[in-house]
Image 1 (tube, rainbow, N blue to C red):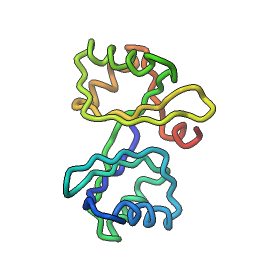
Image 2 (image 1 turned 90 degrees about the vertical axis):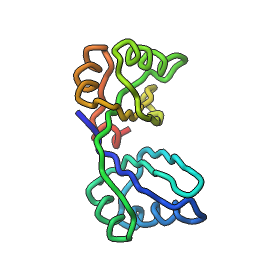
Image 3 (image 1 turned 90 degrees about the horizontal axis):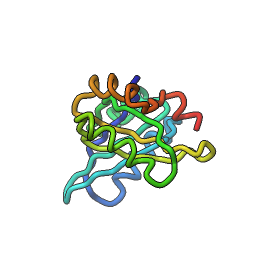
Image 4 (image 1 turned 135 degrees about the vertical axis):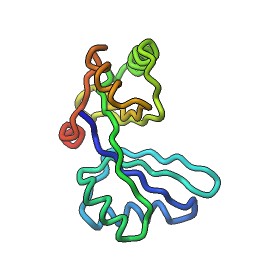
Length: 143
């Protein structure tokens, strides 16, 4: 069970991020989670949106360099050491986290962590065995 993530390669200059959100907003696409990692000249904007295929299409049509990748969403208790409990299990299983970002469900008392692992298949097999709850795309948009 994976979630589709949109990655946009953007120049690190004023207004570029607003252009991305304008394009997908005009297409009626809703952003649920995002992360922006930057260098001095460029950045990678990672988005979880309600219509990833449509986002990919409209951003490409507007000239952005964009790709779609599979990530894993897991539910984490929204309390002290909630995240640490998951990271300790991943460490013990030898699963490497390439990057992650998170958001909190407004009413659920849980956080949702978006993970990118170096071995996604192994993570998909191991996480349920470690009592880590995977989250489906539809739950992300109902939260």
